[in-house]
Image 1 (cartoon, rainbow, N blue to C red):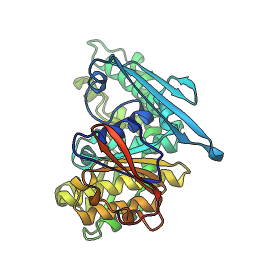
Image 2: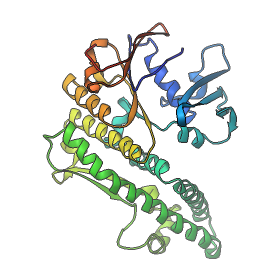
Image 3: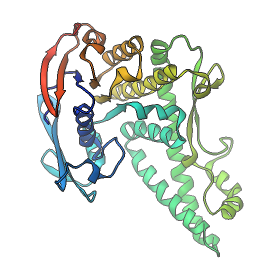
Image 4: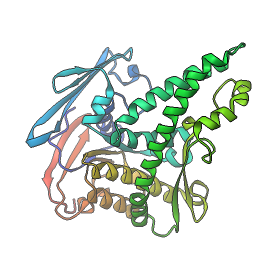
Amino acid sequence: MTLGPLARHNVIFGENGSGKTSLLECAHVLGTARSFRSGSPRSQITHGKDQYTVHGQVAAAAGAVRKLGVRRQGSGEALLRVAGETVQSNARLADELPMLVLNAASFDLLVGEPANRRRFMDWGVFHVKHEHREHRQRFQRALTQRNHLLRRDKLDPAEIAPWSDDLARHGEALSLARREFVDALRPVFERMISGLVPEVGDVVLGYRPGWDASVSYAEALTRGFASDRDQGFTQTGPQRGDIRVTVNGHSAADTLSRGQQKLLIAALKLAQGQLLGLDGADVLYLVDDLPSELDRQRCERVCRLLGEIQAQTLVTCVARESLALEWFGKGAKTAVFHVKHGEVEPISRATSGVAG
């Protein structure tokens, strides 16, 4: 399938199973080298084939374009290309094409495991502070080595000390970067939530580092060493970090209705993208079947905010009439595509935002 040329906002409609989500999946592969859907690479390859290839291009400076390409084997091995050159890290793709997904799985951000919220924070830090990448890698390496030593029957304190020192140093840097991200996100999120769910009351976004914040991480590791030794793993640190969202002092996950929860998560994602946009990057939003997740009024609220921030959108829906182009704002550049049996037909291109 081929999708393009694209406008700022792009509505893709078609029956269930027609291939709409596959188009979003292809865009996601271009920016991350992986699908946002579960399953092995083999499950994403056409029956009878041994690989898939996705290629596209992104706007660069002075009207130029940069070509991206991903080829993945059923074994999982991937070949990544940026501007005609082979690259080794999918971080290079992410730098070229930062993107955020809003779909049914996104709603685990609020009610799911803390790991979902840590990934949310780290995505934001990754794109704003490049030095965070090394701290995160070094932290993960030190954590793995320290946990390995903690499981030994005979533990040499001199052997584990360097890993504890590394863990403390990079863990502090990682946690600080996350805290600064949440602090920067908070006012943007508050503006978003007031536009999407003004009726819910006082919404507060907080950060938990994963240890007693009254002491340094090095001190927390020292205090918890005996317990870590007994349990065989490191119990405190950024690997336990989390975001907490409260409404009028109570957990948002326990207080809000399902529809309000969805809007709150949309506000978090939109705020994250706008924060990156303020730093000069242009984010691509992949929004899968928005009308199935929200009623028409709430869907309109989300689209209007998408139209206000500096982001490009690919939004899918089943029925064309369920998304009005006027929601993206007066004069917004929009395009509409119909997907049927795996084929894409442009319906309108780069038109002003008017009712479809």
